[in-house]
Each structure stands twice: as structure tokens, then as C-alpha cells.
Length: 98
Image (tube, rainbow, N blue to C red):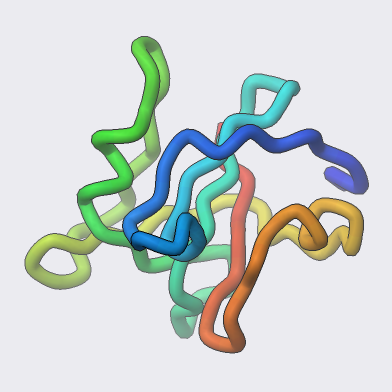
């Protein structure tokens, strides 16, 4: 699933504009790029990503993992086409959330 999504960067928690980051997909879904956790389909991201959401958008915050950081779960992205739009470091992954 999600073999093709066109992404629009909403914002990033880094000066380089990469991880962590939140993107809007043309499908209305959000793509969240963050640190890999020990749970498949779950990323660790800082609270600053919430500042980049547009009106009406929400992230399903699963749990507060550390001060200033939380977990977001979704469908892990495996599509090469979608991953090519992201600049993932070895310790990062991305998930699609509705």
C-alpha cells in the first residue's frame, strides 16, 4: 500500500529541513519522519512538529516518550518511490497516519 504519494513538506524540526519532519500527502494523510523505535510502524518525534500542522490537521499522539517528544504510529512506508522523496538517516523511518 502507498506505493505512490506526492508529499509536501509542512515543516521540520531541523535547520536542514530533514528529520524530524511532517509532510502532507495529496490523499489527505500525513507522513511523519522520525527516529526508529523498537515498535514497528512507530516513530519518535519532538513536539515542535505539532507547530507545523495546518488548521484541521492532527497527529495521533500515542504516548509521551520523553520530555518534549512523543510517539506516532502508522503504516510504515516501504515504497521506494515515496522514500525517494525523503532524506532518511540510518536511524530514521517514516509512517503514514490518517
